[in-house]
Length: 90
Image 1 (tube, rainbow, N blue to C red):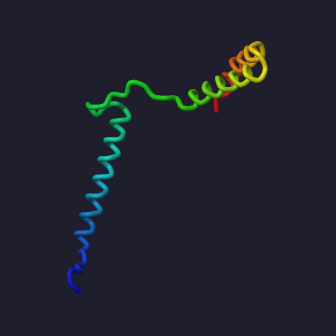
Image 2: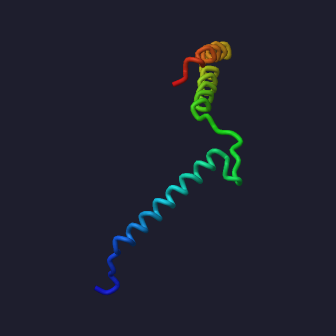
Image 3: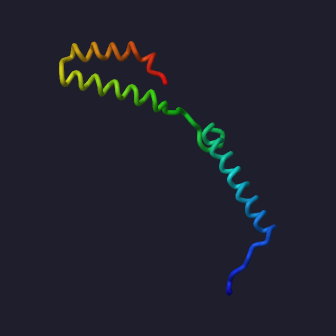
């Protein structure tokens, strides 16, 4: 068989070790970026996606109530959603 070569045990161990080292370094770099410690990127703020979705959903519900019924109904619904906001955490 032309061009076919089997790797020795040492070569395989070296390649596996190198791959593990690269993976560990990538994980450390990703952690540093996430923490804003890489010297290039600085994390200014993070999005709280659950709170964003909750507020967006409340706005959509109130707007729909205003469109289907009237502004008084929308105000009551908005007050109800605001009163229950503390109980919506998961």
